[in-house]
Amino acid sequence: MCGIIGYVGERPALPLILSGLKRLEYRGYDSVGIALLGEEEICVVKNKGRIRDFELDLADLNFPSFCGIGHTRWATHGIPSRENAHPHLDCAGGIALVHNGIIENYRSLRLCLSEDGHVFRSETDSEVIVHLLEGEGTPLERLVKAVGKLKGSFALCILFKEDPGAIYGVRMSSPLILGVGNGENFLASDVPAFLQNTNRVVFIEDGEIVRVTRSGWEIFDFEGRKKSGSSVVTIPWDPVSAEKGGYKHFMLKEIHEQPQVFEDTLAGRVNLLEGQVYFEELQEFPIDFERVVIVACGTACHAGMLGRIFLEKFARIPTEVDYASEFRYRDPLVDSKTLVLSISQSGETADTLAAVSLAREKGCRVVSVCNVLGSSLTRISDWVLYTRAGVEISVASTKAFLCQMAVLLLFAIYLGQHRGCLGKEETRRLLEELVTLPRLIRDILEREEDICKLAKKFYLFRNFLYLGRGVLFPLALEGALKLKEISYIHAEGLSAGEMKHGPIALVEPDLATFVLVGQDVVRSKIIGNMEEIKARQGKIIALCCFGDQEVAEQADEVIYIPRVTECLLPFLAIVPMQLFAYYVALEKGCDIDQPRNLAKSVTVE
Image 1 (cartoon, rainbow, N blue to C red):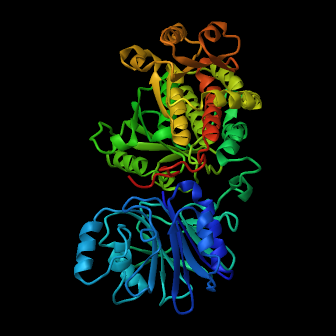
Image 2: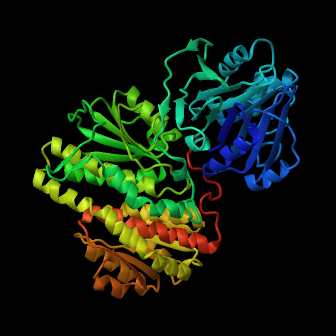
């Protein structure tokens, strides 16, 4: 959602704030703004639109400052406009504030503040916070008083004219990270915002207030009591990994990074000689639970659907998959015998965090699959399995999904071994094939031009169906999601077995169907679906294994992938589907890395 960056140090603040905002563009936004703290006043510049246009508003700005905050806004309350853009000022112009999150009780607060004479300039929920900070007392005292009145989620960066050379940060259920430099410090929503300058961070916890100066920081709780013990963590990412590296878009770069991150995810976890899977992270991990409940959102949930298949096949554990947004609002029947497995690339997904909190209240043990060291999800989980995908910038997830699938498969094998469901020889054969997948993915990427040509034939279609069964059904959902996310084409993923139960009514010549065909017992059923579609003059793109002539005869176009064990097909099938979505969006001229209305990390409901 919204992106926050704050800087205080020895260098001019404006260039560093703009640089940080550009690196947060992947989060999605519709407006942008900055506030600079000078010797006697606060300067605010903001507008709707992109950062590249906003820079024109700053062309003539001459305001020396070594302390400032910036914000990219994704509209929740109020339309995208200059007035609704952040930062917001108090009535006297002595306090500037940026906010990521949602204030649930802002209407009642706004009414009370208006009755007290405060003048509001925007329609946002965020503006109530800056007005709550007006009054008597030190900045910290006023912050303590204000946060006690707020309900909802909020990460805040605040400048007080009376406290020059300091930035205040506040966190509650929205991400906020302190970047520790030499003679300078940063506050941001995410590490890439300041990764060019430092990879040393302190993770601000829920219920904490931080005062940051160029020489250090102090952390307080919501009662104003000073806290100690916050440790500095070194993030093992390099700045180059957050750059495009010569690719036209981050999404394409991240698709091409998949063989490497796949290898990184397997490293140290697979022993071919012994036929074993190891997870150093799973210290004192129990195996006495009776079932697994997987909670996730979007792409991560599709990975979770594959995780269910893996867990039931290899570990023989009853497993359910639930959208985190549904799990958290019912009374799920889970207890201490239930293992909750949560999945989130960022570790900051609001619904997933709430689902895990609910599970913990009910006595569940929690293991999480996550990509971001020290994120909120990792700190409330009992065990964490990191995906090692590195920085993922594009809103449409690609390499993180592949790594999630890999970790879930390894976890299922690990449990299968410890529960006595898998022998060494069976495991060894599976692992030996698994470690060949990066090479096979590279082979698929070398045929990228074929996918590009295919996209040119289909980019004008307005409707797509994606069909799959077994391990390829979650891939059908994910393929459809990728297409709709970045090309804005209506696409629907379905279990092919459901085709006759209604969706076949949609088939006509201007409907394209992307059919995923495996090699299992339902292969003949899928071919039957293809025959039904052809009989109704629908267009078919088939994805199948090399040499499958029977499928080729039914399809208008064919994408071939290497033959592997059925449970490993998703690792190969997803790559051409990602490339197809990318090149369709490219032909349509869409904003691929920052599709409209979407954000990388959904940190509010």
